[in-house]
Amino acid sequence: MNTSNNTIQGFIKAKLGILKNWLIRYSKIVMPVVLVICVLITVVIAVNANRKKAEQEETVEASEEVDMSSNLIAVPQVPLEQDAVPEINELFYKYYTAMVDGDTDTMSELVDHLDETEILKAKETSKYVEAYPTLEIYTKVGPREGSYIAYVYAELKFYDYDKTIPGMRVYFVCQDENGNYYINEDGEENESELNYIREVNLQDDVVDLNNKAAVAYNDMLAEDEDLVDFILDLNNEIDKNVGEALAKAEGSEQSGEESGDEETAEEPDEAETTEEPATVVTKVKAIDVVNIRTSDSETADKLGKAAVGDEFTLLEEKGNGWSKIEYEGREAYIKSEFLEPSETMEASAGNDDESENNTEETQADDSASTATTGTVTVKENVRIRASASENGEKLGTAYVGEKLEVIMKQADGWTKIKYNGKTAYVKSEFVE
Image 1 (cartoon, rainbow, N blue to C red):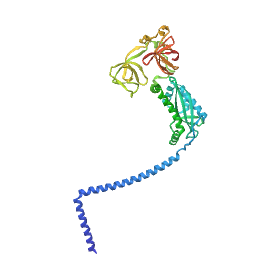
Image 2: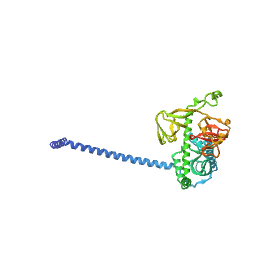
Image 3: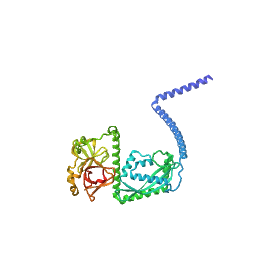
Image 4: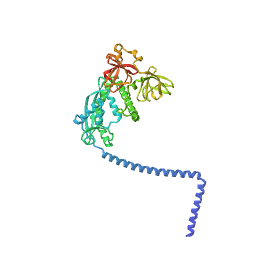
């Protein structure tokens, strides 16, 4: 028996010895093959693990979708109703009236919430808006208790455009704890509420109402090229003025402590106000190499470059950090920080602009005219004209609250101003 076992062990040892010698002899071939086999085994294990992980994630996502769908608010298929809720009608009549008047206090009471930019834009836009002669108010039940989704079709009338312009806006109207309706713009709707509003906005009757406004508006644009320019210019003007107001407000906050309270500031005596004549910067020069642009924006088209020492006629130093200059016979803009005054003059009635007086002005009693410096504020929308006459060429319109650079208040009831680098006139009764 032992002999048999010894024979088997000897046989196995002999075979292992042969295998060992063979592996040593062909190791350069065998080892890479073994390595490849190990890598393949690892890949197979990893693939199987990833497959199991993906299956588990799909199961989780499916369960989450089921949970989400169970949390969604059911959207009822009910038709739009016009003038169905008198309190909501009253809310929007009051809101749109406030927009026309620029009454941001009332708007702030009706909306949760208006930020500073929206308030400034509402004030600025109101200068150009004459009325909303048409308001159609439609509602559908909203996602919260007592809430509504309101669709307001409005026709807007601007001062400087004869026709009304159609449009539509969507509002989320909620009730406060006292049952009063307000426009909810706090942006805190949850996903379920947002989904509800999206679904309602896609219902056929809502789409039809939106198309009604869109088609009417697009037809007007197609028929009237001037309207396109009017709207573009108006939007640019509003955005520019809002930007200036924001910049001015930010600057006022930073220097608030230095400027002090108007009510407690000491009034300068007459001697102090008349000791030195006011001066006006008429020319500026570049103190660094800087781009000259078509408008007061760093993204505006470049007209050229100003080199150090280049001099320009200053048309206006704006509150947003830009200066309007004359460049190659046209208006252009340079960042004010790269300019310094190079020529000034005393602000008086005896400047070169006096040579542009028309017949009516020269016939007026010069002794009753008042030389003025600084600006006047428009207290009612007024036409800007090329001459001191109601028949004079219309150059533009000055709107309530706008500041105009004044040259002289004349005895004939007109105020001479600077407008776009030119001498112009407005009726004195409309400015202060």
